[in-house]
Length: 237
Image (cartoon, rainbow, N blue to C red):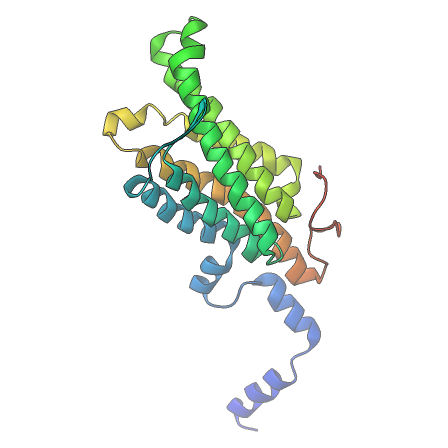
C-alpha cells in the first residue's frame, strides 16, 4: 500500500481515544494563532489593549448625578464591552449574563474613579497622610475596588471565575497596577494606567474562564467547572 494511502486510512480509522487525547493536548485548535485568539486570557488581554487605548482617545464626557460624578463615561463602557464579550463567549453565550458583566464593569470603573478622587483630595489628606503618598494609596485602593466589581460581573457568568482564588488574584492585580495612578501626571496620558490595568485584570479573569472551558472540552463535563457546579450560583473555594 502506498504511504499516502496508509496515512489516509489511519486518518479515517482514528479512534475516539486519540481524538480525545488530541483535544486535551490542544483544545483550541492546531493553529497557534487560532489558539491565541480563542483562548480566553490572551483574547481578552488583546481586546483590553484596544479598550485602554479607546478609553484614552475617546473617554467621553463627565455626567453629574447629584453628589456623584460619572467621569470619562465611555472609558468604562469600552472595558465593559470587553468583559461582557468574555462572559458571553467563554461562559455560556448568555446575553443576560454578558450584560451583567458589562454593567458591573462600568460601575466598577466609576466607583474606582470617584473613590480615587475622594481619597486623594479629601480623606487621605484629612487623615494626615504625606502628600507624596496620597496618589499611590488612592490608586491602590481604587484599583482593588474596580477589579473586585469587575470580578463579580464575570463570576456571575463563569464557574471557573467564581473561585475565591480568582477574586484574590484579580483584586491583587488591580491594586498593584493601580499604583500607576501617579504616572498619569508624569506622562500626561491616562493610557499609562488604563492599558496595563485593563490588560492585567482581563488576563486574570480570562485565565479563570479558560480553565473551565478546557475542562469542558477535554473531559466533556457540564459548563461550570471541574466539579460540575452550575454556571450561576455562589462563590466557590
